[in-house]
Image (cartoon, rainbow, N blue to C red; front, side, top):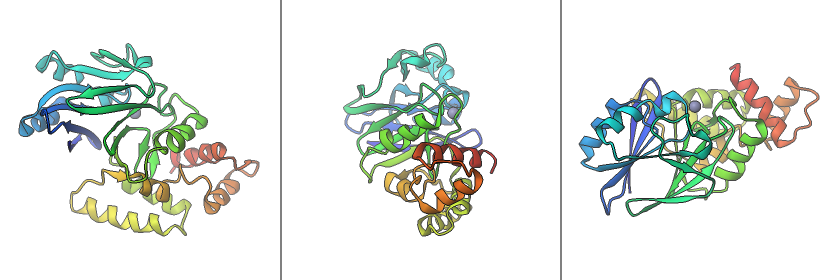
Length: 257
Ligand SMILES: [Zn+2]
């Protein structure tokens, strides 16, 4: 398969996924139609599907216009997002699979940012929307710290460490600055922050990350870190330092960062 990262709006990414064998393609989270249509045309691929990770406008904003242009597109999203995703035709449940050309797409249900949030696993890649970012996670708009902990550390975190993580927003530099403040003794964070600054200053994307990188740099997955736990205890002296309660406090700190 081929994956093309398409910057949209201010800091969103859509991803064009092409099955090399059949030339059929899906677009993950078309924030807006213009850049996506140009990428589809450049690729010469046959667009057959929209894969929405969740219902937020900056992930589905291009659905309507793409459907006008390609009326037979299948539009995938979680079953519980029925009525919230423009043009949705496929209503997914956890661990379901479907075909994109000859590629198998596996659905992970990972609530937390929204209740209907899903990630799509294709070969050695996962498309996580606003659930897992490089060194971050989405805000808990509809879910709980428990949901986000399970989604990050068990559901997505259960994938092999070499899995490439294609996330929904270019927030990497800011996320790593927060991670470095929270865990100043983490050399993986410091190294990745330096690399991200260089990439951004040269106009490059930081996507994709890898799960190995996330286990070593993402403060929302590093709830066992003694340094992070000490920072949480300082902010919230009565915290019992369970993984979920550490994540909850770290999320609150990031919201105010
Ligand atoms: Zn969102």
